[in-house]
Amino acid sequence: MQASSEEASEPVSTVGPTGASGSVGAISGGHESSMHSEGAHDAQTMSDLGARIREARKSKKMTLRGVAEQVGCSPSMLSKIETDQATPSLRTLHRIAAVLDTSIIHLFGSEDTGGEEITVIRHDQRPAVRVRRDGGASILLERLSPSMPDLMLSANIHTLEPGAESGGDIQHAGQEVGYVLQGKAELVVADNLYVLETGDSFYFSSNLPHRYRNLDEGVTRILWVATPATF
Image (cartoon, rainbow, N blue to C red; front, side, top):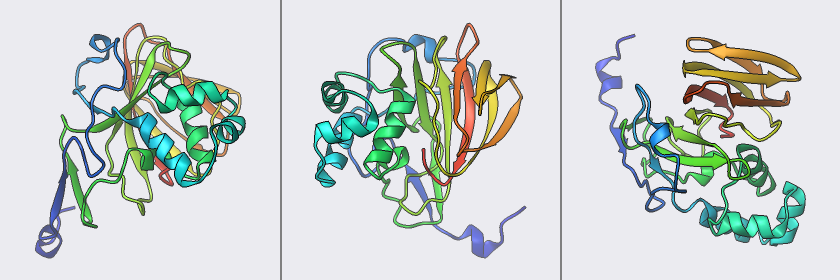
């Protein structure tokens, strides 16, 4: 649908690689070359995820031990995550965010969009965070939507290295829809297993336990949209 002249006159905010929350860079070394694929672009990977988690914990006046017990990990592991000596799995990161009463999208930081209703994120400037389970293959989450506090949905591209997985079942309020851009993945929702290939799409209620993993010998890329903006 073509926008009216009044709609088209709305200011457009362009999100750069840093946003309002500071610099971004590589969160972890290794595996970089395998993440490149047809249609993929280098993401601006968050370098201070651990510091953001620590800041969120301290703002809640919660101890390492208290958060770790609720997350289901050791205080030493949480400390390593906060100091970027370890990278959490997607499931662990989601649990940390839930315990701290925040979300992964807010850990990305809020871009300085000035409250505008239109935002553009350039293809080579997408904010991103890398997660991995037990030091294994990683999943790169590239933001397609801004990180404004009142955002009602979140959209990401999940790029899974060969062998990458989400790290166990995740459950939360909301709804999710996805489209496989490249590769082959296994999606398990409420113990129902689905093999998804390039061009397949899916939908499920987020309150159902769900997990996924890469079945392809190369990378798998999935366009993933969720509401509310949990991720």
